[in-house]
Length: 55
Image (cartoon, rainbow, N blue to C red; front, side, top):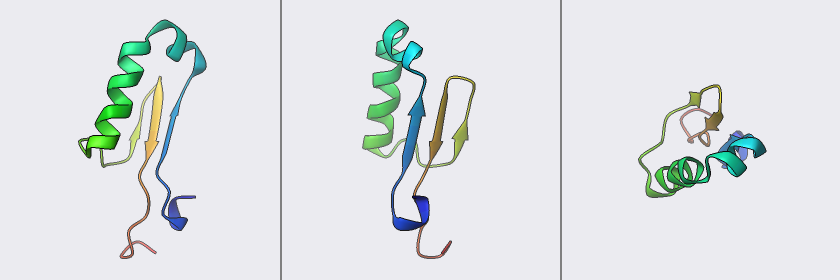
């Protein structure tokens, strides 16, 4: 998906139910462009799309 221009943000459904504000803050950070680098954490994973240089 990343090589086709898609960024992927994955969060656990339990975090959506228990920590909705934190999950929404992460989504907004991605949409605002504040989260642009690969991030792998216990509660979330963000994989940005591959740029043309990375393909």
